[in-house]
Image (cartoon, rainbow, N blue to C red):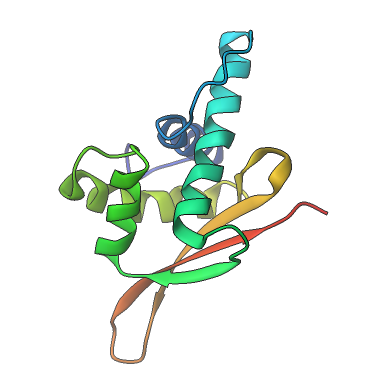
Length: 129
């Protein structure tokens, strides 16, 4: 991924990452429908791992988010996952600031800093209205 990401390439990047976490359900779909299903399913699985069943928001360190990416099969190693996190934040900002979880709502990633400059990652989930 280059530094010059567009909204469309950001959407594709996020979809491609979350497809890795998706679990097929055995239903017949076109290739495009399957990618959409797996991406939304993967995003939901990641949300559940990061926030639990009813969680809305959490703050995590880079290593904690990286571990979540490994735990959900989005990345194969912590090192690989650490490289994904800033790109996920950047892509999320360009892609309407929302990752679709299917009919279950949306999820967003933000990088936040405290006054001393420590960086954490905020993961937020909300339902579609």
